[in-house]
Every structure is written in structure tokens, then in C-alpha cells.
Image 1: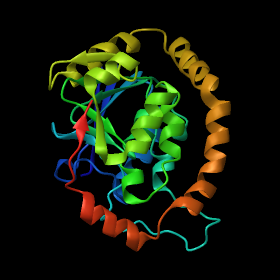
Image 2 (image 1 turned 135 degrees about the vertical axis):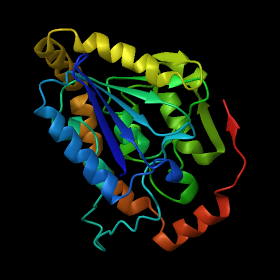
Image 3 (image 1 turned 60 degrees about the vertical axis):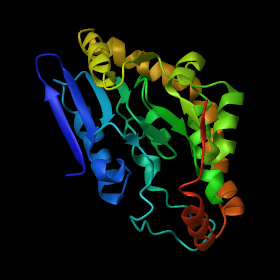
Image 4 (image 1 turned 90 degrees about the horizontal axis):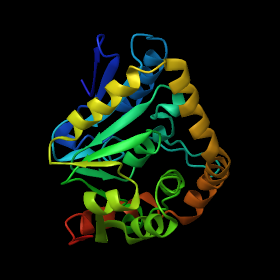
Length: 257
């Protein structure tokens, strides 16, 4: 099972857990499908009024797309088949609040999920980075989502520096990406506390506020997403070259700032 869903009917809080710790909770086609199904299921479960999203294990929240999953891509540059575009709660019309609990690494395609959560709680050992440029790939969707949560210069540095740098949980907290910093391993507990408070409030008021907040970012995000497929088609190296870079640089040195 690549995803676990548990719900506490007493508190009204559900926990969605990415459950591929042996693959650092990377998303394959099965997990992508299960995420879509889960968000849609939660839309119709009135006993759930708030959600916590986390990853199994302490090594990683999520490391994006599983490069070994064999995700098929059309040969035409006019068609981009990105399975991560529909893995988030907002993409599936879920307006119940979602709090992310992050431990370990959160990188690349993880931002598709984090960008659709209301706020993030992170353990002190968490790190954030975007490896795309290192492997000859354009980072387009990820910065469009993160630009709503981080200062422009911080997003630019994270996406352009690739695997050379990782953003520490402390730095992420200071710039506003993370709303609460906990001791290592305590992010889920803190996120559950927040979600329990949210679930105790009138649900339509909470969901309307979530929708209103999301609407404030929609115009810029929509414009950026419209350009993304063309920029990716123009800027990405051929898959064979990407694989060679991935093999050569996957164990490269990096700094944490």
C-alpha cells in the first residue's frame, strides 16, 4: 500500500500518509492515483473537517516523482503529461484545510503537495531543495507554487541552485515557508494539534476561508502554469542526458543554509 488514510471520528481529523519510505516517499503512478482518489473521497466525508498530510519514516516527507516509475511521456512538445499536477487537494476540489507535517527531505515534486497545503509544520531536521536544474530540467510548476509562500529571492535561489544547496528547516521557518518548527520527529504531533483546532470550528466558515485564501493566489499561478509546458519543452535536456546527469551527480556534495 503506497498511501495510508486514517481518520479520528472524535476529532474530525484525517491523516494522509505517503507510505513508500523505502523510496523516500517518491510518487509513482500508483501513489499519484491514490492521492487523487483520497482527496476526492475526503470531499464527501463530512466526519472529516481537517487533514494532516505527512510522509512515512524520518528520512523524507517526499522526494517528488519516482524516476524509476517509468512515467510515459508523449513525444510531441505540445503535450505534457505530468501526473503530479493532479496529486494535490486543491487540484481535486478539496477545500477542507490541509496541514503538512514535514520530516526529512522535501524536494522537487514534493512542492506540488506542499504548495496546496494551508501551512507547514516541520521537524528541525527537515530540508527543502529543488534538484531540477542539476539534472538539466526546467523547474516551472514548483516555483510557481512556492512563490506564493516564500520571498522571490529565496524561491529563485532554491530552484536555480539545484542540488548544490538545501534549505534548512530553521531558514525555512525564518522566511515563512514553515509556520512552526518542532523538535525532530515531533512535526506530526504539532500538525495534529493545529488540525484538531481547525476541525472544531464551523466547517463552512473554515472552508470558505481556505477558498478565499487560495483565490488570492490564483491569477498569478494560473498565468505561470500556462507558460510552464512550453518552457519545459524548450529547456529540458533529452531524457538520456538527464539520466546521465542524475547518475553522475546524485552523490554530489551540498551545503545546508
